[in-house]
Image (cartoon, rainbow, N blue to C red; front, side, top):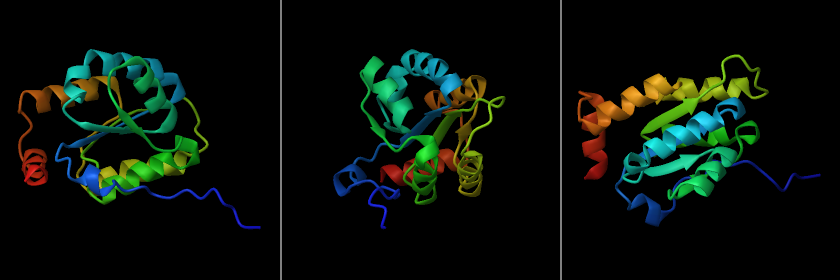
Length: 158
């Protein structure tokens, strides 16, 4: 019997590719969703300047409680982390904020490790806690990140 609900990586559509804004992925484990929502609300003006994608329930939460329009992938355990990893590898995601719960065992730990690895391989800025997320946004906002991120962001905008 063939499974009709296949998980696929969903690249951006042509009209979304024309949008030259950088893309930020927001992911939060269940125990970190309240922190993510608070962080996004505090930085909503920042995120308005970016395309934002997220795993399903995190995106649903942000869409419901902010004025942002978040493109939702699948839930993390159902392949959403891998979908975002595929978008990182294809250079369609430029920044990842992933508020992980390091004390909770996740059934999809290999998917999480793959996402972190692909960010490292492709030199994509990755924040895994609120402190690093705040520093990353501050550096971008104040144009204080040097080197590859700004070179990359200028290349995307062309």
